[in-house]
Image 1 (cartoon, rainbow, N blue to C red):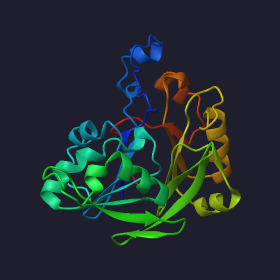
Image 2 (tube, helix red, strand yellow; image 1 turned 180 degrees about the vertical axis):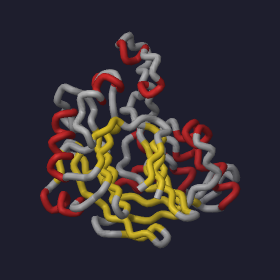
Image 3 (cartoon, helix red, strand yellow; image 1 turned 60 degrees about the horizontal axis):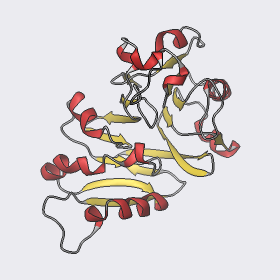
Image 4 (spheres, one colour; image 1 turned 45 degrees about the vertical axis):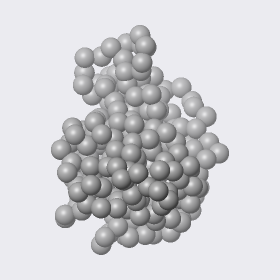
Length: 253
């Protein structure tokens, strides 16, 4: 299985528009972060987890010519607003499967009503096949995926475990029974927004505590803001098995 980090930034991306923060002026390409998303590929299958406003750019940068579906963690704009850009895939492949919590599907139907509407549909609009996710394993082709139910302040968000790989973004709290689903995971990806505490995201200290509790062989930090600091400086201070993810990084599980 190959994981591509399509984007590793927070909702504003890095650099932030109009910001004079030093990280926003960094020359290190690892400090340039699009909105958070990953590509999960195995055998002949390819799935995207979240498609934010940078989706088109991410697909072009990674030369993605086919996707088998889009899996959504939650409905926030930085995770969903690229849905219209599935059109090139739809034109070649037909209806695109999407997977999400019932609440998220309802939100997408409102914001992208022209995609979901069956009445007088515009010929250029894409179409999707809806799959409602519950907090129980589901199949993507021949792969059983385990949802990890987490809380983003007061909003429910799904993380996902794909065999030995788990991806959790926009997380602040995880119940003990959900942590059990992460037992013996080899690679864990988790959000680490910044150094200072935040009301709805792990900060760096919380992310490292969570990683130490789960005990994966390797862990990667994502959903990063400029307030975390320079990639190179922060990574040098991390535990031996913890890394900062960056855009277009590929790892094999």
